[in-house]
Image (cartoon, rainbow, N blue to C red; front, side):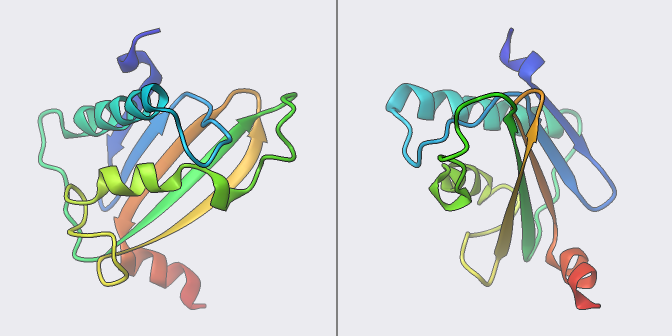
Length: 136
């Protein structure tokens, strides 16, 4: 399967959605070839979203990272959101969708679930949209 078949992206009214149809490895650190592969996937998804349009850059963004781990894998003891390669996503979004990854320019959340196949969905939106959701 080619990289363009693995990624899917959309730019909505006030949100960018990047989907990578690949299971995120359970380890906190990736070896160099896996690290480079994931960077390629992230940038392919960003490139697909940018095709023919300008991407939004938020003064302050909220990034929601949704991780679907494949069912029937023996990784229940490894599922720990803080032990995933989350910084790989954040570091490759900064400078494109928000200025920096400090608390003045972005916040993020990570959720996970089991599914038939592994995938990552990244939603980037204005922080105000997220703040409205948690306000009540």
